Length: 418
Image (cartoon, rainbow, N blue to C red; front, side, top):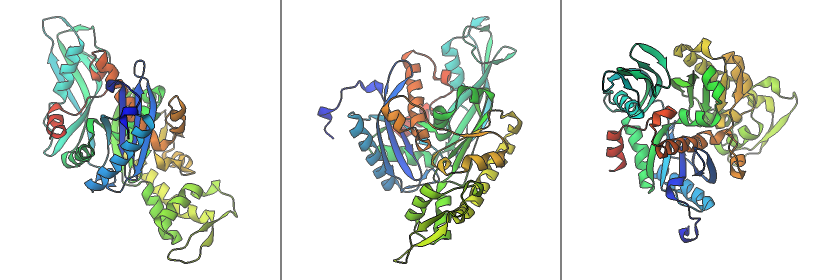
């Protein structure tokens, strides 16, 4: 594109989110406004053919998809994306709790922002297993001397400051492949962000985070979940079923191509038979020149419903493993492209036995309204994440204020600059 004609915007005000998914790569460009508000000014999307279950398996194809998505977003925004906040997903991601403490200088020192940052750095300096790296250090609560349960320790006097943090780690090779793909697309990686954290930014309400809610992000290759209580993430997991599995089931059951099965799923698919009319029929294209056929819509449901039941049974198992089953008065929020299948909220509520709603990202402006779709939850959440980090940086506050910490500096320096 001709950047001589591009709208002139200070580079530091432009934020770009890049969601590298199994079925699509999506780039969203925003302009930072007052505080941490961000206005969406550009979007681009490209089919993803180099990613499986959130993990890059073909770098050249992934690079091409990234380039196409970025160029489309830049063309709409009339500005250049210099760096991106990139989503990270996959079964290799895991979470664990860690406790660290430091002595405050002097015998009775007031806790400062710099003390909190030192504490968060200490929490991220632990040794993890070989070939694993820390992606996020998320503060849960602080202690000052013998007093626990503190969430805002700034200004409190004490001799020793402690932190209970949730560490999110990932396998180094898949992370390397994400960063390499972005770098080969001639874009700088600003930070890596766990997909569940990004989606939660876009679709979870403040009271849901506080009361206790499970976020269920149904992507193309897998379903990512995160449990929030008392305004903090407590548990993460990945269930190996996503939208592609529903499409494949339909392709086999209807004897039709994958593209036709995907289109049929989007237009006519339903995961709960009780929601359908008795005699409704649809036309299914044949394969290899064969004639199309008329099939009852309930036949589609007979294929899709068992897969949906399996998905939420596995989600229910993960909720049981977490130990937070009885601490979810906020219920569940399902998002991602798979949440758009008719009947998913109903069958999720039936299997999980908690209230369920579908989470739509909500952003002001014309483009924000256009993107009010669960398929964009992660992309928009990345923008919101980046806006908060930039706002915190401009006010010289530790990023822990927003419950995040970027990947370790050692990891960043090695991968981002080679």
